[in-house]
Image 1: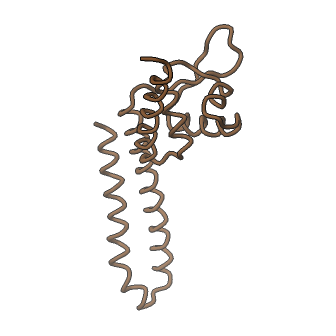
Image 2 (image 1 turned 60 degrees about the horizontal axis):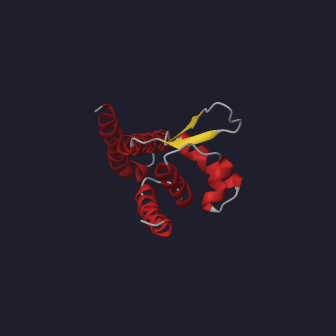
Image 3 (image 1 turned 90 degrees about the vertical axis):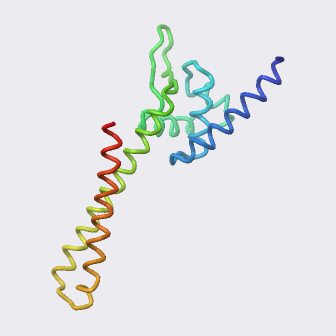
Length: 157
């Protein structure tokens, strides 16, 4: 296989992987960066990433921070290299599922807490119009708790 063919195939793989990764809530740039790092199989500097993807070093820094926050990339050390190097976490399924599950747990928890605050405010009003909404609100709070519990169970498996 000649070099242009290999590059075309790698670009097609990168495109398809980045589409999948976007479904986990990453931006298109974060998805492309992760796919590129995963396929490159070697640690890279922000400058290397910026050159490879045709983006600014600042946008690479922002994207790498977001990927790092989700444990999708790791900063690595190499003797003699002063700049930070990053590589993709190679356990795709585990990495993305853990990140996705944690997002769901956090989101469900935050929404449940907000809804419970609304419920407290409603109890203080004691209006007949508010009391008709109360049973539905309790169901919504329970729904969020159940969603959170299901994802917590998945995390333990």
